[in-house]
Length: 317
Image 1 (tube, one colour):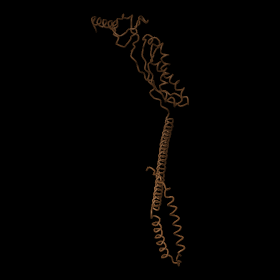
Image 2 (tube, one colour):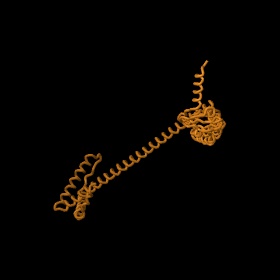
Image 3 (cartoon, rainbow, N blue to C red):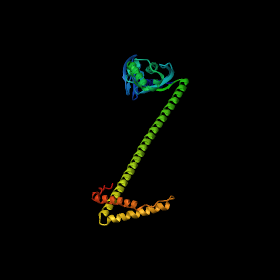
């Protein structure tokens, strides 16, 4: 059995344990005196009256993360989805968190699930998957308003998973495959369209260039032929002018007659040699009339020899 000193020692230790208390940093303790709220103890060393005072509640002032269990929600288009999330809360008033509600953690989870079912029911499946941020913001506003009397601040809410049924997942997979095939066909057709337009533009430019080249070739050929005709005409006019000037000189008329007679006799001889028919020789009268005609031509040329002006020379291109 313990002796009196041992009992006294245990009694002193019990009194010290009930009298002095240390509150950690970022924590708050609720002190009750004879069952009534007395004070909120912050971090540090505090003194309690034994048997009269006691620590009724202990709260952490740090932000807490609470898992919201999965639950079945029904969307606007009557599709069942399983949704879970995570809730971030923080105690801002330890007194209200102690006396405003019995268990603020459990209450926050239940309220988050209730609002989640309500928000999911407002949207169809496609919008449910796309508008997570909107759903999170709406739930935070509803929880923050409801938890204000509890002395709790809801800082964030995040949806972790939205799981549709397997049949819906299979349908969505087929839909995504069809959508990808559609986009691929559109991109392919757009590429072919662009290629066709580019080829047609290239053919158009090529045709224009070919036609322009053909046009320039024909213009150059026409200019060349015109220049050739012009040079031939100039040469012919110059030769006629020189012949007329030669005839107008003394003795030119006789020389021309002699030249014409030589040409006549030579050509006449060629005709006689190549002809198979009999040729009747020309009489003196015919020859005399021929030379009279030649004399008329020469007289006309001598008369008009001063009327053959030199053609103007065109500048070379």
